[in-house]
Amino acid sequence: MTDRGGASGPDRLSAVPDEVGSGPAADPADLLDAVGRGDEAAFGRLYDLIAPRVYGLIRRVLRDPVQAEEVAQEVLVEVWRTAARFDPSRGSASSWVLTIAHRRAVDRVRAEQAAADRTMKVGVASVGTPYDEVVEEVAGRLERQQVRRCLDVLTDLQREAVTLAYYQGYSYREVAELLQAGLPTVKTRMRDGLIRLRDCLGVEVTA
Amino acid sequence: MTATDIHALVGAYALDAVDDLERAAFEKHLLECASCRAEATELQETVARLADTTWSVPSPRLRTEVMAAVSRTRQVAPAAARVNGRETGTSRWRTRLVASAAAVVLAFGTGAAVFAVQQQRVRDERAVAAAAQVREARIRAVLAAPDLVVRTSPMVGGGRVTVASAASQGAAVVSMHADTAPSPTQAYQFWTIRGTAAPASADVLDPGEQAVVEVVRGVPGNDTFAVSLEPAGGSLSPSDIRATVNLV
Image (cartoon, rainbow over all chains, first blue to last red; front, side, top):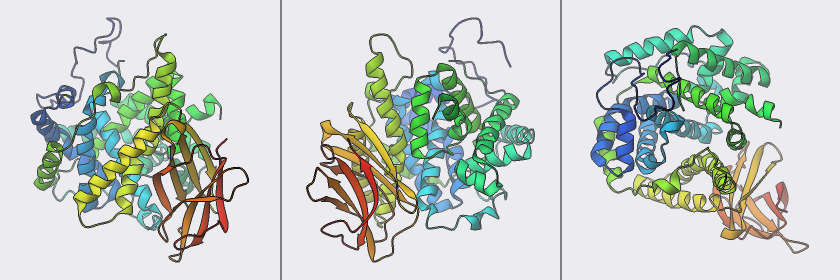
């Protein structure tokens, strides 16, 4: 925990770069602000900054590169369309974008859920992302390591509940079924797991 | 559901592991609880970090397509779009109405667009995207109405029907999802029922179609909304009612 923002009152105008790693010069929140005012060039820069995470996340959830591209396109255009909606007092710009991306991916999974036999996919649940077209980046690698290390801090049930929901798009009811646990237990594990993850990653939101 | 019960969903909510109705209920809860809002924001921020491990560079074609789509996509205005959780004295009532409608929009909105795309698997992706946008705009217009009333009911055999009705719009957004698909020779049909009059058909889904989000005109003013299972193409009166939603 840092003491930076605490006593000195609301300082959300001076965006203190709290993020891990030495990110590129452009700040997603500033870019998003410009995008909200119709700046297409700023959107291009924002695209370069966030598209790999948006596409990677959607692809991880959908497990189909072609569909993932379709959904990523929808999401990125939605970011352009609704950029003015972003409210910096309610979280970071990248979290805002990734929330849209994750929800769209999950919507797509659930819309197709009935057709596909999802239990077939459980077997490959814990296999990592195929990195065929991946360009590794040092800052990105550090972030990944930190997230992986922090996931290891969770109990097995917490980790499974969190990752099945996030990376596979399962609802907590489905997670309960998969883990053969009660609904209240799964809800608690998800919450406790995320709290532990938050503390390990040092995530802070100064409203 | 008590506040404690609903707040237990905060982790599942941050992970998008809740259904549309739970999400709407949870977002309503957030409007009434500042500390819960802070926790939810922090957990969402944490969840976003999980995407750090999935970094993958898309093909350059995606960038070209997105930039082209952006150049012909109109942006929403900030004033209309921004929903602020904070309430100030005088505008409290209004904020609450707008915010709760927004929660419903969030609950229906993205799903509606995806369904729209799913429902019209046509080769021409542009036509699909345009159609989806029109549908989504109509859905949002109803859901944004200040007099919106949301009612829901389970379906026989699993699934749910939600009717979000706005008298000022003369229409409702109906979201239906059945757990099992009808056979290819059967279809779901929507009905509105008023008093003792015969049920009036409101729509017939495609044969075998099991999920839909759509605007249905003329729903407000009726007593009941019903879903029945019929032979493909629909019937003149309902034969096998699978769900009824009370509108009054």
